[in-house]
Length: 198
Ligand SMILES: [Zn+2]
Image (cartoon, rainbow, N blue to C red; front, side, top):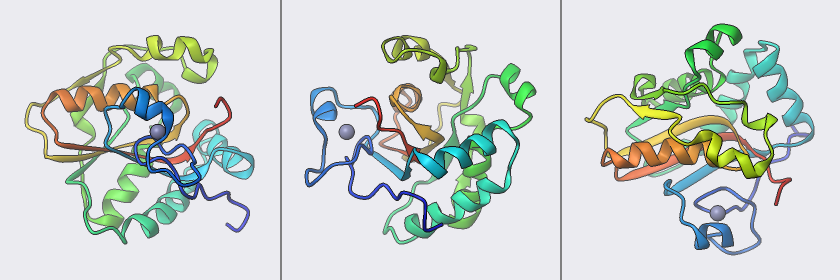
């Protein structure tokens, strides 16, 4: 645990590490749909290896380990979301992988923090190419219209859960769809924030 690189002070909206400011230049230029982003670690070294093992080699024990660490920090907050919504996988990818890593973390957090778990709220409507296989310039377009919101009755405060935030386009697209349904506060919680492309 001591080896894992904690993110530290970061942009309130996109979790990009910052020295002092509350909001980074990217978010000042183009405000993301989410109001708040929380990420536990920097996506590098041991964290990267653990997430790869979790996601691609079915090492599901990592959902508990990361979930516990995230819950330790988040449980100290005065206000928590009404529900947690994992970034959905397309059914074809879910069949191939056998599980949704974001859902595993969301389930753990929902139970640890006593928040409703609502995976049915977001649906993947398009089979997108894996973001990690694409150059950054194409990632935004790749995620466009990837999700649909399944209900019109959403709570006021929602947190979207994903494993890693890199360009932010995946969670940003999901947040945009949720916001259109009238949700007032949208958060994004991820295990790790990749910062190498900045
Ligand atoms: Zn930012």
